Image (cartoon, rainbow, N blue to C red; front, side):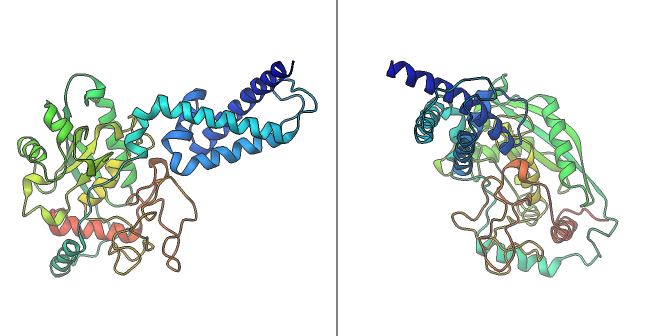
Length: 382
């Protein structure tokens, strides 16, 4: 009798909590029209580092509002104490997360346990040298949000693949055009427009799997495929599936404008193929990896470049941001402040590491800088 009663309680609570957890998780993640298992998995696995506690709080909130007859019409056994309900719900939630980890670890691991997001990280010495050169060669034209700066940048898209399937890198054309749309939306107001000038597809397992910064594979790939001059954006989509451990989970990297004259064939942007709109690299699958890496290609540093000390990222209107553990943003934590006194961290800035849905803006100062950078080094002028 007792065993049967507890079974009924567990079943009822599991149903109620599971349903409410799915709903609240979807609200937290700004995700709609997803089935229950995928929503909870996204909440408790894809963003475990900063959302699992939110998930648990929502479970507790749901329990506190349970009535003898739930909205679903499930009747709970009278007289069961709230403490027992909480204990049982925690057991169920823990079991669910454990099971979810076992089922989904292969998909989630590259992005929850990644060692690097972007490999466009010049050293302090490299930045100092580049900025000294820029200061002495910078264009003198009046540029900025109110200037009528207008330039069209041709984009050559190189699809690298190890086979013919999507999982082998063979992304469809619509994901490429969607990427260009996202890119133009992000750079609206900067005076830049990106136009797809051409797409090619190359089946080369080594290039797809092993291309990474400073490798012979990426050198050969770029030397073979790159098109256009300094003003042409070359985008390479690869897998990063067989790279050094230091690049575990890498999303992308790019060259800076000032390096073009030294190594023109190396110029361009390399991104993970699954980070394009509709890809599988959640929560980095809305296309903002490309927006971020193109930011480097037009001369912007990470918002956390240089940490809390001046001159930081060499842009006056981006608040200082710590560059050590906990500095680069994960998720979309409103109110984050790693350099007290300098303003809240710019978590919505495209040059931070926030989840794709959180990235929405460049500052006016970044606009001025990118216009000056590409005018100086890429020959792109008003």
